[in-house]
Image (tube, rainbow, N blue to C red):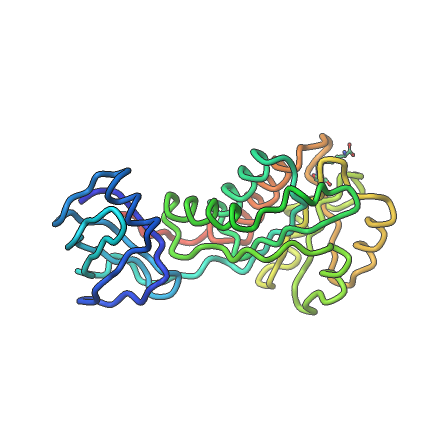
Length: 247
Ligand code: SAH
């Protein structure tokens, strides 16, 4: 079997016929040069992962049939990432790493110092899909439309801890913060390259669910802060502690 793995937005049940999108058909036919009879893996964020045999490989419309289930569905942990988009390649890095590190939802937020013309939702979705396929997740993180941070915070869900990555050094350690809110829905907020404005920090700190967190004595780049915060969350209270199913 090829090690190709695709996210598709279709029901997956044994015996079901699959009609691949034009984009996926192009990938299977022209890029990977697969032939009829070859097998791939597909997941849809709902039913798990399945083995598919290709029955018709064409440039525009590939077809397949679901043969068997390879993994039951498991959703990613209930952690969101709120980040201020940075330069293109660094934002791509953030989306890719956040997906690999298992976030459930990604919310691009516009802060005072965010360069808002860098928000390209379609590109973010494509990055997340590709990263999810590669890292063997069973779902793709949901990507929200970019929104002003201030506005998003006004409707902040009551039960969700908001871990605010605070470069001022005044916060508590990430490990301590995450452990204190173990088992609760969570979100990590990372600021833009230029950092948060003073009054912005004040507003965030005033939120009842906000917890100021430090990531140590060095100032990290936004993309490093994202990867560091999510790694510590996963290692302390997330799914790095669960027994994984490996093949
Ligand atoms: N220009 C700012 C740094 C911004 S770093 C300055 O020099 O102060 C971008 C973002 O990464 C910050 O807004 C913060 O959310 C996060 N970050 C960077 N280093 C951090 C640290 N040591 N602790 C917590 N958050 C950090």
